Length: 359
Ligand SMILES: *Cc1c(COP(=O)(O)O)cnc(C)c1O
Image (cartoon, rainbow, N blue to C red; front, side, top):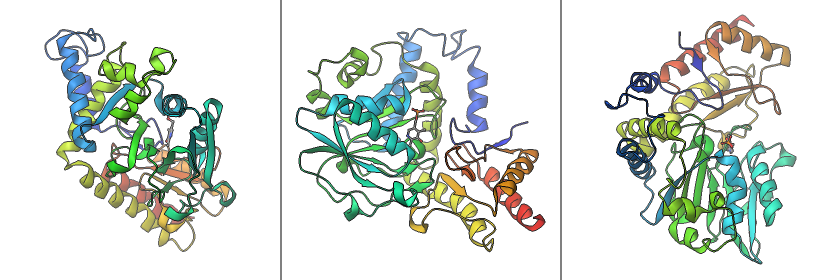
């Protein structure tokens, strides 16, 4: 039996996508082997690879001067790779520290270059995203890094910093679930395992001019964007399974109407859960400021921790899993990524309503 999976990552994948993967696992396109056993230099794999690249461009609407890269190491490797490639002598990176993930990106940037926090929400408990004017940009700033959706804290950025300095965004937990304002960005990245594919890589969109400008850096090959870009992410063995499944997810996203439709879909799914919270007379409480509520990670509390444990246990008995909040913040978190169906959301809301009445 398939459960309703609200895990924060790796994500639930749609049953139809998994069924296709299963059917192809012993014999991919008449090759007599699975896609993960093919040579990554074979025409069959190359076709999958090209298709994934093209679909990533179509769904994201990335302009032609943006290179699309598949890089192992997840979003976490990008925390270091971005400053290594982008920061030149005397240049600094500004960080909008909106939660646990932004803090991790900031901390890694400081290990390899000069970085400062232009806004820090830690004293407010990361309960909201800043307004455009609150994000300070200092002279000599090469880029400003934002985390558009904070997975652990359940917040969603609605305003970008008021600056002409290029932005870099970690969009891991809402990747391709909202339109991207391309002219503002030099680089957009995310681990694929939240909204797009099985774990195994980051999907990186980076301006070609930025890749070129970094080409002379004395970095090991794997850490150089130009090394990946020159070979269309086939410089070494790519994470073929992640890429093949991502291509299926992207094709499904394109068929559902593209990124605007996906944003509407996730807003509607989240609204069902927030509505249940808001009509509960304080039984369920969202710690997040109303204007900063995430569409992807709905975080909420119950009257006490004992009841939160009971909630998680009873939910599991109804096949609703992955609802325990992150260990650093506690509470409940329902992640509503692209692979989570409207039926799963209905099941969660029905359970929340029953639970409130019986407790
Ligand atoms: C999960 C997550 C990460 C870390 O991703 P990995 O691919 O596991 O390194 C980084 N940023 C955000 C916003 C995330 O949700």
